[in-house]
Length: 232
Image (tube, rainbow, N blue to C red):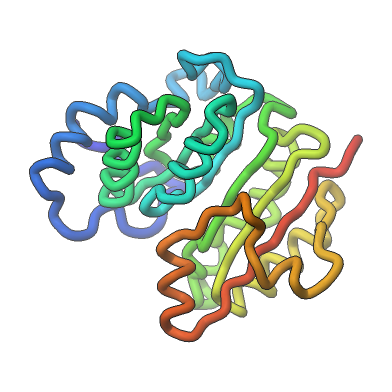
């Protein structure tokens, strides 16, 4: 199976190193079993995506190698998880984790996360993760950054009152950019009260390889939590 063709919103690499035979087999044979699409209507019923009954739906936009998403799904089997990613190598890694651990509550959308946001019904999502997104450091590329005002507007629509948005980055410029937009958005409240609230992950926030890579090179990751305000 070939992954779907690029859509206008997509930026960044779709492929890295050549996949090993086992990874190619996962993409070909296993991905179609858990992949989802917005279809011709462009709409999704999130709770209808899962074979097991789910109490809520969480979304990770740009799951990288999938280690955070897989651990969250294992810790919360009652929750349905939707992961968005376009990087084929990362998708193959997540598929291997799902297969090895028999995880049943993950669905994958091989598209830009903004397409998922547009497809979901209002107030249908209880938690969103955007962890270590591409910082797009060049000024002319700032419009490609995922944590934009437009994205936050979309998240405000699909997130239920009291839902949590988690952001993480090790890039200082992107951090300032995200904080400015998220703290100025009327629908979101920053939950930090003291420096330790953004310098350390919560116990229920599994690490990612991007965090480990940042620390290995001396960069300090920052972990941000926002709550969807009630009635906004």
